[in-house]
Image (cartoon, rainbow, N blue to C red):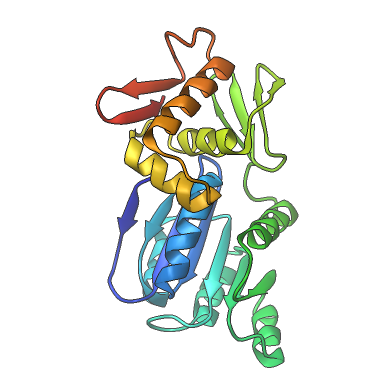
Length: 240
């Protein structure tokens, strides 16, 4: 997963994208940035970083996300300012906040936010709220495909030519990671790091080789001559 930096400072703005979905996350806690980056990457999003309200506004000028996830406290400005900028573009917002006082919540909702979630939160809960807002606002597509194989991130299923495949939880995350980076080389180190962070399972280099083999047996017409998950010798894997 490529992470692109724009701007400096403590706060970070993450732009998560799939081919049809973009989520803009505005966050000032580096630990949350790191953990959400790994988690949402595994759920099919790409990451671009920037800093503060000013950088968030610049990101909105350069791109049109389907949804914004906005922390209230930023290196410069505030989440309320980012929400106003999003409202000008008629983009939905979910607030991420450690301040759950009634005044802050009401102010955020009055500004047009779709929802808010209080820190600390469970990643699965956040993901559920993201999907709910996207369904309600009509943004995003839950399906990521490569050739005859498709991943439905909403139902958590993998199909080939319309037929559902039986995959384990870790196989699903690995396949989702590869499909979400179509056209990009993922090194074995990147894959291992993301699987470890997202799934909480211990996966070593030999285990990764086994999982790649299993996936190829399930999705490739000829696993010995893979056309979907391709090996870049000495480096890693790529899905074209």
